[in-house]
Picture 1 (tube, rainbow, N blue to C red):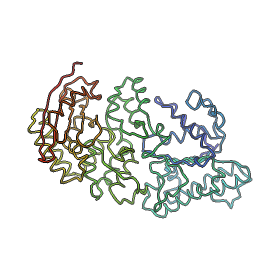
Picture 2 (cartoon, helix red, strand yellow):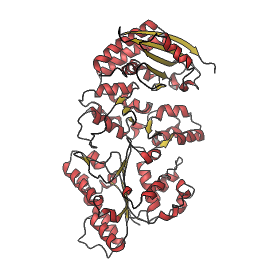
Picture 3 (cartoon, rainbow, N blue to C red):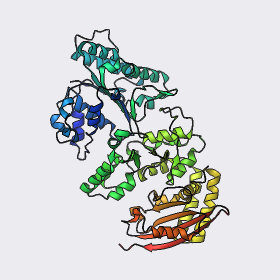
Picture 4 (cartoon, helix red, strand yellow):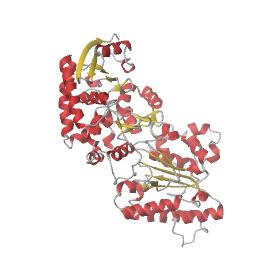
Length: 530
């Protein structure tokens, strides 16, 4: 049992000791299934605060020969598996955190040498007669042990990408680190001595030109998580159960912290959920561990359409994004799509895989974006906010003509700033038009799919403003009679998102005549009977 070779299970025990622990050991069923196969080379990337280290510690506690973990996992999901004991504490495990290694290595330049030296020293203690002093390469050491003993190793690397992220401009460090990983994992020889390679970090594997630096790895990301999806963060069912246990308002938690839609799952940030359960304060917990200053230089890059895309997303809209050409580093950006893709990996944006769009996932993250734009004095955003505030006040005062004129003015200004196609322009206009509503309301809920002819938005006021601001149901029509917008809302009765709402509701119907470019508006007030 050592620091890096065959660690004990104490790190995972700390997670189990916590008051709030959500059982994610079901992931081990999949890992057991792929052990000693070509699918056993795994890179699972996810944002900060999404439990990367806990998962790495769980794998170590389960597989490491240096631990005795049967009691630890008793009662957890994995213990129900027929193969629970088959793999339990049966492997030589090498586990290291690259971020931690930077300190004893005295900087990024010494990390690779430190890791190889430290791990080989521990291997010599375990396999004293098999590693002569001439062996200084970790890959060679593992290969030699395997040839003599047949032992296969599990290698777990936490924060594997920290050198890629934090030392992105240091080409010497980059090349040495990638070479180290390739020597350890690529080719036919590593398949002989590796039973499982598990890399976890924020970024996917770095691309060199058009190919992955480690193209034998299966990658699971915020863009495409597949079997890892329910293990990225807390699922909606898990959050519902926690809210019931701690007597928290699930709908409020959902509005603040939901929004990551990953392969069919609603995923919540574990850190945020745990914090609101503990303190019962609905606020942004993001900046406590990853300041919005991270995104300031990104959203201020000089790419056509980037700022307008950010404004749209702050307003609640989704924007198209091409994720194909992102190089998975923090230096080379060639378009706004590269920036948006990085923000998805960092957790500042959600990704709709079906529609290939990016969006701000929830109120917590939206506040971070608003803070980032304010700190740089975005004139475009300030102008839209001023016009939008006038529009919101007119809507609340039920001034139909003023609302129609305000949307018409914003539509005209918006068209000069942001390029859009005719099929989604109306919904984009509406998002921008009610930008200022985001101060008092949550991100608008889309009740109907966007597309040619209609766009339906529901604005629910935040708890602190619920007594003074009504809920808004806004229906936008294209080349129709404006009265049909209100009628459609009534025919649907209340949108699903308003079923539990007990306050005042304004129905806002807006029609846009494409030929005349004139907008019309009708507003009605409803009071729920609950």
